[in-house]
Image 1 (cartoon, rainbow, N blue to C red):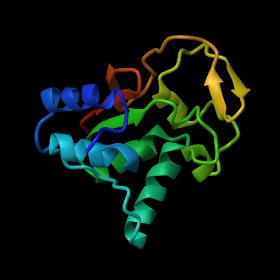
Image 2 (image 1 turned 120 degrees about the vertical axis):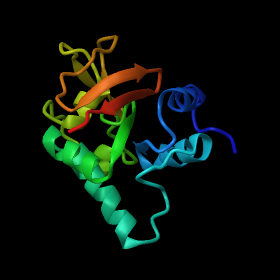
Image 3 (image 1 turned 60 degrees about the vertical axis):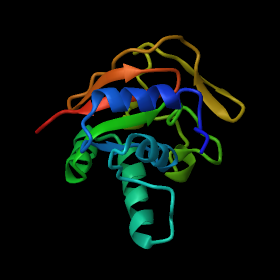
Amino acid sequence: MPLVSVSTPDTIRWIIENSKENDVILSTPFYSTEICAYTGRPIVLHPKYETKEIRDKIMRFANTLFGDSEDDFYKLCKEWSVAYFIFPKSTYTSNNEYSWRYFTDKLEFDENSLALKFEALPVAAEYENKGRYQISVSTGFDKPNLKYFDLIYQNKEFNIYKVKPR
């Protein structure tokens, strides 16, 4: 099975080398299956939407991620025993009809969105709309100021956060 993105092998390698076999990984459904298949780590979400239970779980994840409460997202991670949150970059900055912002009806830019904080953009980042994408016009990434999540690894496509223990 081919990997979805160029940075996925690097991310997979990082997970294998830096997490325990029983560490639960949370990511978007699209990447979760690869994470599970290539690392053997347990995942929370998957892209098989046949049951109402998984559809509700994905909506709960998305709506909490695109809300403004880090506390609520942390509680969700603790409920699901999540050790690491793998955040695909551009999850917030993309706002086309296939994006999570579209899916959650959060198309208006919201500087308080938790998903924006997970993007780890510089504090002074400026944004502009470019066709189907809302992009940062500044360069580089900074560690976001989060209470419960430590940014511990980055590559071109992913930010990996360690969920702090209670």
